[in-house]
Length: 210
Image (cartoon, rainbow, N blue to C red; front, side, top):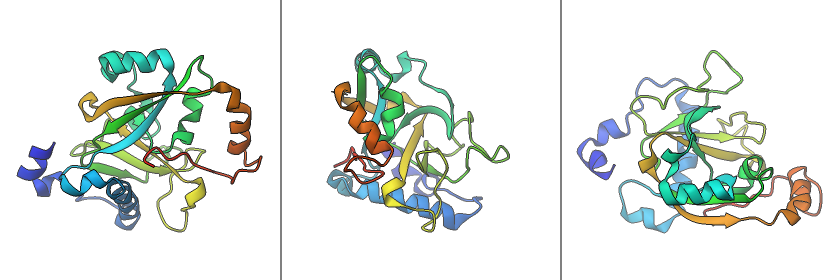
């Protein structure tokens, strides 16, 4: 990826032909903040971030042993066909809370040249649901609310209730690093947080990069 960046810099970050550039720029700028929050990215050309993937413990162990390609992980996702990650551990909850061994797999992720998604999955005319990664890009990145709708401007952005998703289709872009097993005894209290109850702030996040 670094070699591609150094040899074809203009192509690597080519976003020509995009519509609604100001909205996509907002999403790109948010991603840049995630990249810059990790000090190691200051000295490398292609950023590496820390991300989470909610799953079951048995599945997480198989991924750690043999990689994501060994599983049927690439399905028709809301924002593209691929494997999904987020920098918000709380956002993984729908994917681990119902599992027999709830787990978050923390991984290092190279998102490369990222397509900033503003196409809402509910709009069938522009939706990326089930579609391959946009040609010329290595991943999709979307700012999203808990209900799956897109956030594409400062007017829509609420820091306490905005999450993100990365979609990649190449196993080589991700390296599993840590398996975090969760105590389901705390899920009742966690559910209260999700619903804005208890003594927690509504939308309270567990940010994987901190």
